Each structure stands twice: as C-alpha cells, then as structure tokens.
Amino acid sequence: MLLRPAPSFKVIKTVDPGFSQATLFAPKKLNDMEPEDRVRACYQHACLCSVSGKMTMNNSLREWFGIEPKKTRWSRGSSGIPLRRG
Image 1 (tube, rainbow, N blue to C red):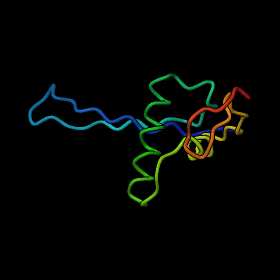
Image 2: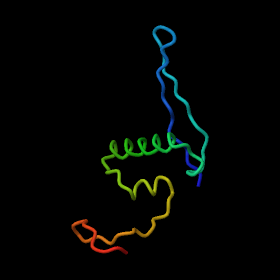
Image 3: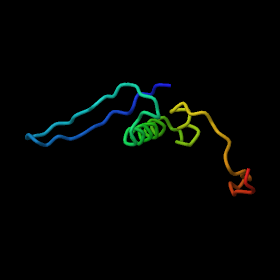
Image 4: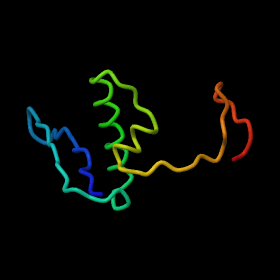
C-alpha cells in the first residue's frame, strides 16, 4: 500500500522578512519511509484525529498506515493489567 508522507514545513530566514517552504512528497510504502517521514505522518494523523474529535490510538494508526493487526504478546484483563503471556 502506498502512503503519502506528511508535508514538511520549514521557515527560511535567509532574506528579510523570510518565508515558509512546504515540501510535498510522492507516495511511498511504509517500509520505504525515513523515520522523519513516519513521525510526521503520525503527527499529521494525530492532528486530524484531534480536529475531528477522535482519539489517536494504536488501532487508528494501524488503519492509517494500512498495517494488519497482529496478535499481542500479552493477554490483558479488563483493567489493562497483563494477566498471562499469550
């Protein structure tokens, strides 16, 4: 699945009064993204969730990135405390 990495925004102050630079990126596979790209994509997802009144959760990030849910290593009780290794 190809994802569009979040844009990068920079403030350039080499001239007065300065300007902003926005860089848009071509779609990439998640594994081909640099760590900075993934961080920006997670931040963008969190911002979009916030303005739409939703919570950012691991499940929402998995959906955003198109990652299949995997079995967890720990079984949890209703309190969220690990009960046994699964």
